[in-house]
Image (tube, rainbow, N blue to C red; front, side, top):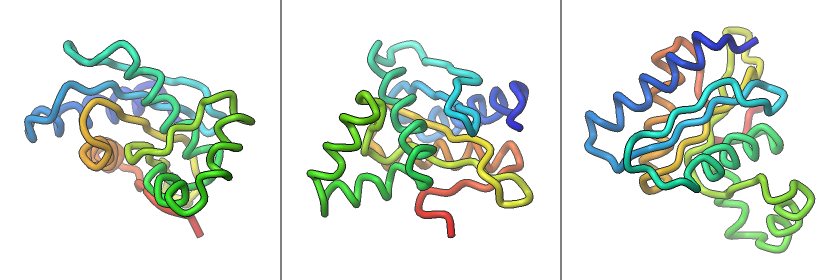
Length: 144
């Protein structure tokens, strides 16, 4: 289970990393393993669509079982399949780095973080920093 207090800790640490690196304003969504929103924050200056992108990165990671970096790489190789995924998911999957799975001590997926606002690689750096600061493991690629 991913408690609200831990989700908030993840968000605050991710945003602290962004400010330390002087990244663009971010939106951070934390979802539980069932894809339900646990917590969200949008920094001043982050665009209004950033929630949808952050949520889609996290949701897509949960849906596929790997981080959105890998989803991005797979999109480059098989755009048709990713297009189908976008259709069947109602447009909720966003193939761009910044969606990262959260694993507990037993290596079980307990949720995902999605971040949007800067370039995907920087979004991902902040997601990993937030997850690790909260004491969890971050997964940006396939869990095996």
